[in-house]
Length: 146
Image (cartoon, rainbow, N blue to C red; front, side, top):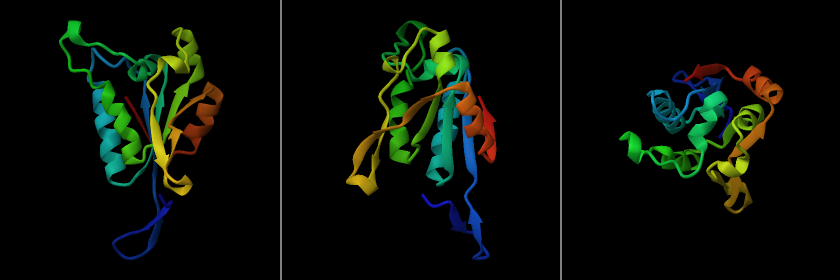
């Protein structure tokens, strides 16, 4: 996706960078599901979308979620659609994983297809330190916290 697009007047304008920050566990509140819906809507409108998972938000991406006992729909398989919407910048804070005894192997395998490399699958999830994530946050135009 290009960083620039034409506005209604035909002038070039830079695409805004949207960062969606997920801090809450996947169930018990509406935050995780609403964040996922907003991310997909933003991506459908060709925004430059990034998603970060910190604190208990890292649980949103864990494999094998089973919601049968809590009577809620398991929406975690929907994260696999992010690559189809060209959401390729998914950041997980390393310290949040470690604090919860998780590793990248405990997370879903999310990928996207790189058209420039004959549709080679590439990993969407990047585990980054809190310091690196701070630098990524500083580069965003709009941040939404969930």
